[in-house]
Image 1 (cartoon, rainbow over the protein chains, first blue to last red):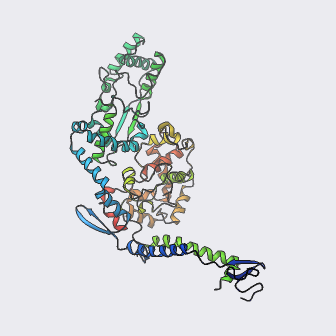
Image 2: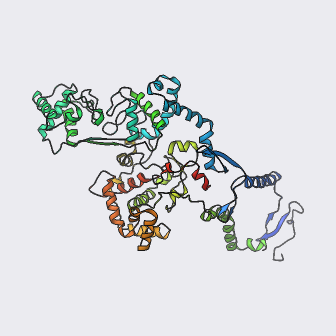
Image 3: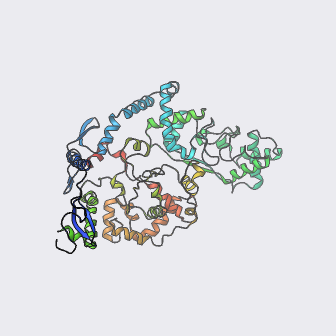
Length: 314
Length: 244
């Protein structure tokens, strides 16, 4: 402490005013040595006390291959047997899922709905209120990515769930099956099978089934014979009358509801015919993933009930 | 040591400052490397296949982690939405891990299998084509660009140095067969990386275009396996608690 510029405690010119550390740089730079504010000091001591208690209660200090686990504990159950674990967020979650108020109420509702038959659920306002609020969350996360938030789908990509027209069936059972196992929608492309004339004819016939007038009668009748005959074989899935076949996911062609092409948005008959013809030539291949591994049967029932209600129908 | 010596010596001051401020990090991070229970014992976790690995690299390149986390925390609301909480074991082969810390978009730790390949392709090209309310930017070039994988062996070798069990030698291959089974061990064999990558892209046809292997193939292959390796039905709800 005998370097040049080093002085005793206080700065010259301000004797006794504020204590300094005694270091002086560049001739006149000094450092005050004020005591720490009281509130700060006590806050600091409080954090020290807090951490001591914390270390005692919760997992804290690493020791070799393990760590101090703390004396706070959590009780939970595994397969009916009571377990006790030191405090940790995983045990906390298990306990929360088992005994937390919201989780218990939710589980009770799910259980009742899983055991009730579909009509009971639909006629019970309490259950229905639960279905609608619980399913909205699942629908938003799992279904809305494709079927859109309101279930309207996207023409050409993902089916509309908000109407009463169903490819694979609109009963709650059928929807449950769709969600659990997923669906593979397939119509073969007829690019190799039909020439332009044939494709045009079948398109004209299909449009006439849906009640669109203005097609060339000759085309319609040729189209009908291809549709009903061995050449097209369309009847195998869509049925003789074009009413569709739910077990194959084959849509009803007579109701003028179009999922794959925007027929009703087209301006003229020629435009409509072109849309249908192109669809016949390129075929349809769509996949809905299976959710049986991700959602519990009770959740799937809740979701199916919700989806059914979006549009109703069978 | 006198304070004055430190205060008048900038180099020493910097060095000692670094030591002091790193203690906080070191005491929190270092023990995790030697505490026995950090990584859970669980069946099914394996390193990425070559195609998935390239997809992961693209995920990093495009900065997906800036908006998407891959870390489901052990809370009830997260469990209901995303599925089982993430395990340390599930990212044991990630270098670097993609846990992230910000969710502008949803967590992706278990996005695998949730949506169809076709949806992912459409969504990555133009998110608002399928999710009108989305604010995610589009990544249309993934579908246009051919996947570069002439350096796939080098990428795997680099990860091998970091401890990922990609095999170079017969012994390492045999060890992988023992550990992961024959089928997976083949995927981890660096010598077969190229043929494996091409075969998986052909078989999976992730981007819907079988004629070539695009970046989209790799990206979708990666997204579709995220969080799918562990079969949680095999473990009771108390099992993973025991590792904490």
